[in-house]
Length: 484
View 1 (tube, rainbow, N blue to C red):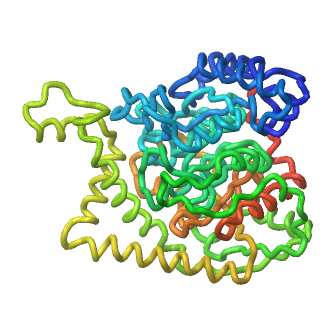
View 2: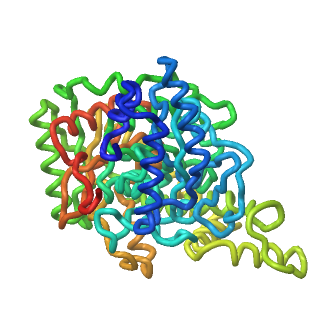
C-alpha cells in the first residue's frame, strides 16, 4: 500500500480495497520499524491517527466523503496542532503543546486526512540541509550519508521513504522545493497568500508560505484543493477564487511558452544537473511547448537581498521567545535580564542566533536604510523582472538546486556556501510567485530536480505543466534504493 500515490490510495479507499485503519496501521508500523534510520519524525501521533482513521472509515461508508478522506499524511513541525507538541525543531519549543490547530491542519482534517505525526526540520525553518534541528539531522533515503535538504527535510524524507503518503511543508527561500529536488519528490510552494499562514510559526512573515511534498503533481493538486482557502485570521491571505487544481491536469502543453532564464545556467551549476534539466527542456519541446530564452537580470542579487530581509524579519518574530510566557526557560534566573539572556542563548541553536544577530544589525539605527531598505528595493527589481518575463512566457523553467544532495558536514562550517544552495529558489519567494520542483533525473545515483515557476495564482497551470512531464517520464516513479 505504501508504494501507491495519494491518488491511488484515494481510489483504493473509495473502492473499499482497504480501510483507512488498515492503511494507517501499515504506515505506523513502517515508521516504528524504519524511521530510526531516517529520523524524519519528531512526534508520532499513533493514538490520534487511529482515531482519525476510524472516523474516516465511517465517512467513507457514507459514500459522500471528501477526496482525501482516510489518507495518512504528516505535518511539518512548524504547524500548530492542538494538543500535540509543536517544536519547530528547536529546544526553545521542545515543551510547547499547541492550544489550537493551524488553518491548514484544520482544512486537511476537515478533508478527512489522517495525521501520522509531526516531521523533523531545521530549527525555526533556518537551514538548507536539516542539520540544525535540535532533534538531530534527517537522513536522505537516497543516500543516508547525505542531507535531505532543508528546512522541510523531515517531510521530504518521510514521503521519500514511504513513511507518509504526503506531507505539509513550508517554504521561505526554497525549503519545500530544495528538499523535493534532493529527495526525488514533487514540492509545491503556492503563491504567497494562497494558503493561510495562521498557526504556522513565523520565520520571515513576508516570505513564508505553506505548501506540499508529495510523489506526484496530481497528489500536490489533491492536497492543495484541501489546503487552499481564504482565511480572515491571516491578514496576508488573499481572497482569490479557488480552483479545482486536479481538474486542469490533463490539458496539453502544446502551444505553451516556457521561458529559460540565462542566469540560471551559469557558474555554480553542476554540469550533470544542467544536462538533466536541458534534457527535460527537450521533453517539453517534444510535447509541443515553445521554448524561449529570457533574462532575469537582477536574480544574481537575490541571495544578498534575502539574507538581509529574512534575518531582519526573523529577528522581530523570534523576539517573542524570551522565557517569560511559553517555551524554554532557563533555570533560576537572577533577574529579568538574566532570564531573557540565558533563556535565549540556551534555547536557540547557532544558526538561529546567527540570523537574529544579522537581522538585528540590519534593523539598527544607522543601518536600516543602508541594508534593509536597500534590500527591499532590490526585491522590487527582482519582482519586476518576473512581471516582465510573464508578459512573454507562460511558465519559467530552470534547475531547483545547484547540485544533488551533499554529505553531512560538507557546508556547516561555511554558511555562505550553504546559503547558495537556495540561489535558484529564493527569487520566487522574494517575488511571492508559485513554484514547483519535480524530479528530472539522477546524478551519481541521487535525484535532481527542475523548478517550474508560474505567474501569480496560476497553480493550476503550473501543476498541469508538471503533470504532463510526469506523464511523459518516469523519474517521479523511481524509489530510493533499499526502500521496501
